[in-house]
Image: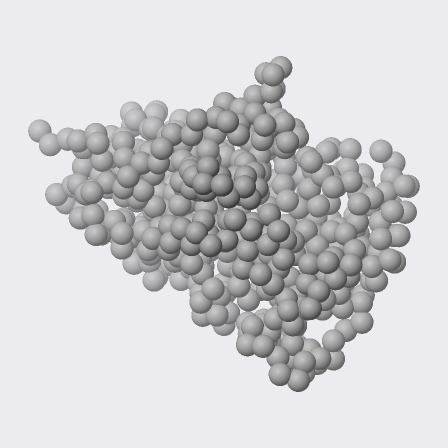
Length: 472
């Protein structure tokens, strides 16, 4: 009798190399049916991340076909799709890689229970993080609430070597039907901005590997300094690829470790950034509220503005605050789907402190605009900036976006790259912003640049007054 196939459900692990679930499936001796499901969680994604996910799925499908198999695409509620495929193929086992945000964990827990009730074996595997959240504990047995002690506890841990991609994926004799990816129209919500945004994406496992190699070879040695300079190509850019699992965190870890042992001391800063990402998943696992509510619950009474229709919120989203560092960063995100890390701190501080708007307004906007959007990392980042989260910047530490610009973009290369107004010959990148934005915004490159909606000193004082008068 032929062996029953294994359904290998890909989610945020869109690669073949260093893939524990896929490796186990291929070594089982059973036929393997790779599957991607456009389920309720995929449907809820914002415009930019949904478009970017579609590109990654397309690339994965091509790589799987090179291994002699197919990527079966289905759309619908995950439990219904899996049950349909089980019925059609005779599969008795489902494999997937674990995820840790509350929404996905709730779905997966329900799925595992339902499938086991159906008599189906379900196995989950690691691969999205370096260390499973439940394996990292304080000396007293609890979870870490502060980053630095967590870093010290894991920095010397052994991390298993990454796994090679399977040389072949043996599929069934008869393949189930598959949707055509084009019919999902995952770029549709981007409307006219899809073509420009796509040009800034670095898609797929091979491209991610090349990106890591170039970073280690040319930029990691000066990472500590250059990562703070938004006009300099000084970061790895790998957050985009880690988001979709086009590269594994442990492959990045080992590359950083090799660089460190080769005498590139700045590689340790890169390793710390990987553990900062781990910290986000660690917290989302142990305190799921971080993705939707104030991590520090006593901040629930803080008087943030919550109306997204406010004129200052509109100006912030459109990159028209009159504060050049803020506006340049917001436009960079709109055009490229990414934002320099220094910019992320500045725009978050400005929204939550100078404008006194709730961090969830910013989190939701990022969720629509970022190609490296991640439910755990972005939630922690916003709450860190706002003051309501773990390892938070104290509320009274308010970034001055003008002095920050003088410090990190002295010659204004970055702001000129993204702000067209006031320049006789704006750069292509600055002009691209106006080709992407909705026409209803009625913005043009030859408009006058606006005066600040809230000045640095005025906004800082408002934030300090609110902090001093808080009732917690």
